[in-house]
Image (cartoon, rainbow, N blue to C red; front, side, top):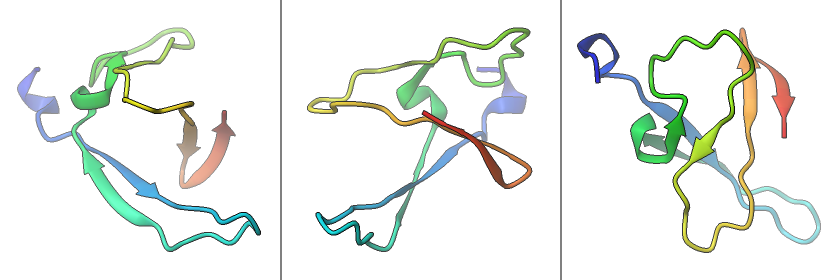
Amino acid sequence: MRPQFALIYHQYSIVGYGVTGNASRGVPVIIQPSILLLRPKAGAVVHAPPRLVWAKVKRASFYNVQLYRGGEMILST
């Protein structure tokens, strides 16, 4: 990893939902990007829509990607 990217982290908020749709308070989790996201590499410059590749997480049935620009969510898939 190049030194200028050594302090990059991802912050996630883990939220649980009940059967009625009520959400729990989010629990913040901070993870180094190299732990889960395999591609693109941290600090990579992409010139086309990237294919996101994660390390497998035991018992995970799906992954959710949310893309924000300027604090506004522009994609959730």
